[in-house]
Image (cartoon, rainbow, N blue to C red; front, side):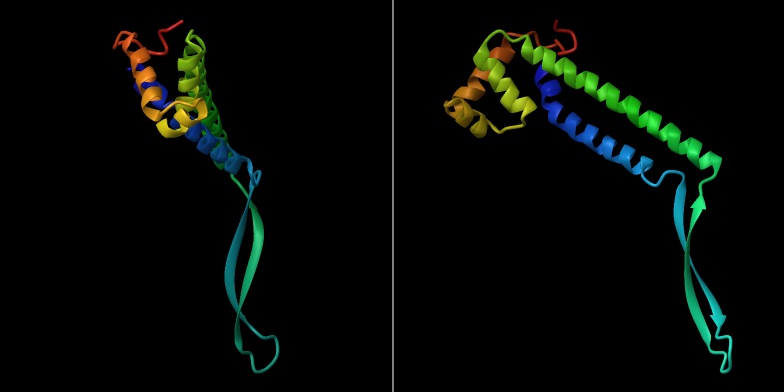
Amino acid sequence: MIKEELSQIIKLKKEIKQLNEKLLDLSYGDNETIVTDKVRGSMAQFPYLPKSFTITGREEMSEECIKERNEIGVRIRLKTQSLMEKINKAYEFIDSIEDSTVRQIMVYRYIDGLTWEQTGECMSYSWETVRKKHDKFLKTIPTNTSIYDVK
């Protein structure tokens, strides 16, 4: 179970990044939207040929739209906070590992998102050695344990 939770760290970071981008999009543009419309008219003098005109302007958002946007922003902030708490728990779990080698493997693999080959290269081991040390450590932890349970 711990392995699955740790493998979620990179995905959680990406999700936080996406949520922050959505939050930025919500705050961009303040309480106005730019609207464009096309109208038809004719020239003021003879031969009175029809002509199309494009007009652009700003339209203020209704209070209902502003309220909805604020509610979405609050929801995004709460979700981001929840995801950050999960990531912090994973960091705490990794920091609690006593063996420095295993701790480094966990950091490279789950926090930095490196492959086994890259992790082995960073630590001057073969990728098989790194993976075996990782697997050996995980076998010492009971299978139904969660990173949220470990202190």
